[in-house]
Image (cartoon, rainbow, N blue to C red; front, side, top):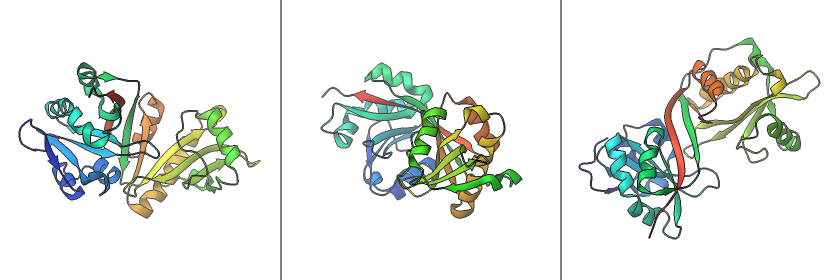
Amino acid sequence: MRAGGNDLVTGHGLRELLRVTGTHPFVRWEVTDDLADTWWAAGDAVAFQRTRKNVRRIVNVMGTDDGVTSLLNHLPAIAATVSPERRAFSVSVPQHLEPRLRERYRVLDGGDWEWFHTTTAPDEHPSHERVVPLDDVARAAEVRCFLEAHSPTADTEPGQGERWFAVEEPDGSLAAVAAWGTTRAGAPHLSSVAVDTRLRGRGLGRTIVGAVTRQAVAEAGVCTLGMYSHNDVGRGLYRSLGYEALCKWSSRPVVIER
């Protein structure tokens, strides 16, 4: 990515944003034409808008360390466009550069997470036959209870339009679940993967993630997912199934003095 010196340059349009980022998969699948109406560049870095469900627009900053640092210095100007009425707005930066964000601004509590992507289907396995579609509307209360007990940080609720899948016990109770939603740009996005804590270590996570990923790649050619960075077990599982962690983000509300 190269936009010139360290002065702030304003760009417009998804096509140009994809060009300057080398068609980075995160931009390709998380940014749409409306979000890319205005974006910014400085040095070898870009700042662009994205959104997640009901969250207000977020600014992601991507590029070389020096370029990202330059863009962080320009956050007040960016905030004037993205969030002119709010004192704080959400910013995501590469995790190793989060201290630079704190050096420059007052930063509130947020989260560290990683974005994974694959275009390769995992190998087929006989256990995938256990993965079945789940009626998350009719069984919404059951799914909520399962997530609360076995994955309380899961961020996808049943009954919101995602496709859900499950591994069931012989009596029909849930042993594992996963939701298949879509990114803003339409890629399959895996979330709320949960395995009954009493059954962990039996390969159920591998079974449900592998089966759903195979189907997603077969249908769309790609599958994505996000994961909180403290989940070392999940990271190992996803990598072993062909996912690559392309981005490691620190997401923080940043207070802008106006």
